[in-house]
Amino acid sequence: MGGERHGWKKNPAALVTSSSYLVCGSMAGCEATTALLPRSGVQGKDESWGMVIPTEVREEEPGGVEKLRILVSEVTVHQISTDPWYQVGFVLTTGINSSYVLGYSQSIMVPLGWIFGSTGLFLAAAISLYANSLVARLHEVGGRRQIRYRDLAGHVYGRKMYGLTWALQYVNLFMVNAGYIILAGQALKALYVLYRDDGVLKLPYCIGIAGIVCALFAFGIPHLSALRIWLGFSTLFSLVYIVVAFVLSLRNGLNSPARDYSIPQLHNRIFSTIGATANLVFAYNTGMLPEIQATIKEPAIKNMEKALWFQFTIGGLPLYAVTFMGYWAYGSSTSTYLLSSVQGPVWVKTIANIASFLQTVIALHIFASPMYECLDTRFGREGNNPFSLQNVLFRILVRGGYLTINTMVSALLPFLGDFMSLTGALSTLPLTFVLANHMYLKVKKKQLSASKKTWHWLNVVAFSCLAVIAAIAALRLIVSDSKRYHLFADL
Image (cartoon, rainbow, N blue to C red; front, side):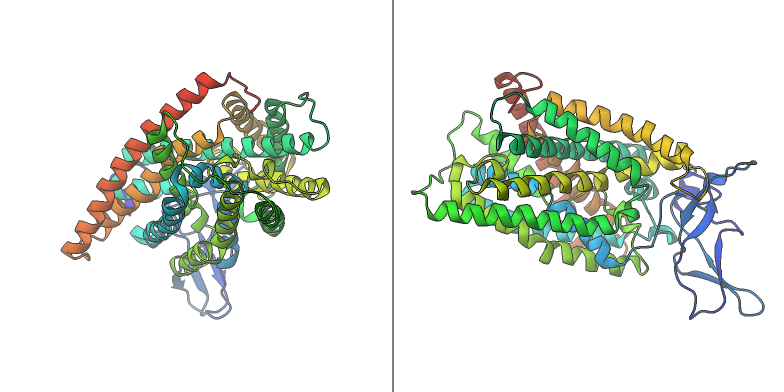
């Protein structure tokens, strides 16, 4: 076992005790339903419980009664192995078709142009599918389900890498959430401007309102699997603003004179191009694949591959449609929030902006869930009822504090494109591409041919170099924009 081998995370519950199993009457009637397990081996009068699921490890007692033993990397109070593959596919699709897609025409296509922008999007999708598949195949390394990215890295490398991976992932998710709050604020401001363009309601105020709504939603959704019906609403909201943006962009483009598609001649064009390259990988990757895979039913690897194929085929179509149409209609003058560029009936744009705002609130919860899970498991979640007064108050205090900090950063530096570039450079590239290839190489080295080993090493080196260059470029852009705009800018 990874924890035993490295001697750094010995958890009685996670290592499976004699009491941690499900009892079923027969093989055929035994399904993966939620089991309760003492959290972190804590003993006492008021013992906390977490919910985990076995990984097809069975024991049989006299009388034909089966035990399904629980094998997970570390115990959690959130649900494990409860969701079908298509629900997980919608979680992934919700991420890539969030309101971020309304900015890709400007943040990717404008700096790269038609040829490199369109080619880059398809190439990034193929590379991302490959890299995420590598991570998915490592989900059951060590004979247990590695339910967190840091657990997987800790098993493969040891304690120090556990901490470094958690730090990288935290930066990734914090920056993604900051971007979501900025997007929600932009949607609110665009909605206000439709009716009163008097400059009274500024972007920082809208960002503050968005942060409050995101916090209220977080208080009521205890864990990732609890999104369920909200994923359906998220898909509906995504279709609304994507269809509106697509149709209005098409109409505007047909009625407009020739557009300018030339790449802007900026003094920092090189940095903009590199930043757009980082945005390409940001568009498709979550940086939290093991946490999402933890919710999927057995067989976890096969089902996760189905979800990934869904994400990168059907799930990617709306992204391509709105990105290409927005750039075609407005060329290099398209805005960072496409709904601010389109011209059409006020009531249609109103519905689209409301849908964008609401979908962003839901999507943020997905990317905040690893932090919520960590805090709930270590410090909160007493008893089986996530809606008990104590658990709700804990969520209000802890999640409210986290989102307050996130909202302040978003309002302080509301440069969405720069956030995307920096996130892609600092976290998405290392987590999704560098670590994925190196971990796969380390775990599967005895099974890989010399040519495959060389291929994975080339990926590790190439993406490491790209991450460093992209990080420098993103920081340069943030410094440049900070000089052009003041803090709490009303963009």
